[in-house]
Length: 419
Image (cartoon, rainbow, N blue to C red; front, top):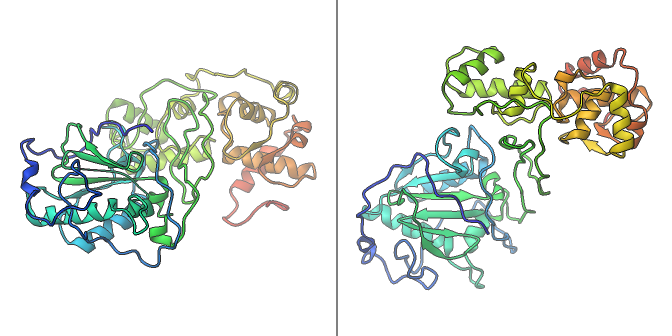
């Protein structure tokens, strides 16, 4: 398994001279699971947090490493629930935060809402006691010997405290050599299952592995997380149809490039990428068939400045695109969320202008596909089958107008025959 990257975010470092011996004499003899490499001695019967109900007989699979891929503006629900329960149970320390600026530091699960810092000073007796109780309880084996049973039930991926790190994929405490010794807080990173709250601790049952959100285009972040889990691995990212190499901008970014993007998006050019700017970016991406990353990435820059974008696919006519899709690509089956050259060909065959072809099967493409299928007596779902390729390119008279009208329908209304 890979190991998490060295943490380089907004943690507050304390002096490196805090000695492990400060914790050596205040607790009962540590149980065997603590080991000599634990961050401090654990009590023989550590006090833990109580689940909201029965946890069930099955134990969740141990979590492998799932690194940060996206940029979130709020913690995921499982992260927030764990934070609130820990603080209310122990009554020690304080909330050190969940979300971090995406524009500073290295990779961190804080940035996609899957990490929390519990501020506990190892030199404070009561806070040290709370840390020992929680970490001892979290990593203790179950009655049947299952290793770190509560960490598995919570979907904990790794924890760091007092120059030591425990991970679900190694199962042991090891030295932690990051620049911040974590002597003033416990860092907790969760899997996607744990961060969404889809684990036995909260629900009383186990869940299939959640692979989280996916990176659609190369050199771009993943899309923002949806409420529902993703139980299939992500496809490999592809090159966007019309990228433009400009600085990638997301929450926390500042400078002239941010001001330029804000002007293009029609928001006040403050030069600071705020949550309001992110919301405007997400709205733009939804309307223009772009992955909803919430970041001004290469694909979004290419859409905002279409004349400067560099196409990565041919400038097909609708007829050429239809022929390519049938003859060279083999009439591929495409769905909402598909991406790549075949999607660009589909968009061209549907009559979208060159500057509108993004290579991503988003809302506009879904509407066009639904209207096209309905006009040919097909079930108006957003699935492109060989039957759809056979009727492409079709007459585009009124196709776009009807698709736009459907996109403006109130929520809950669908085209006749839509699923």
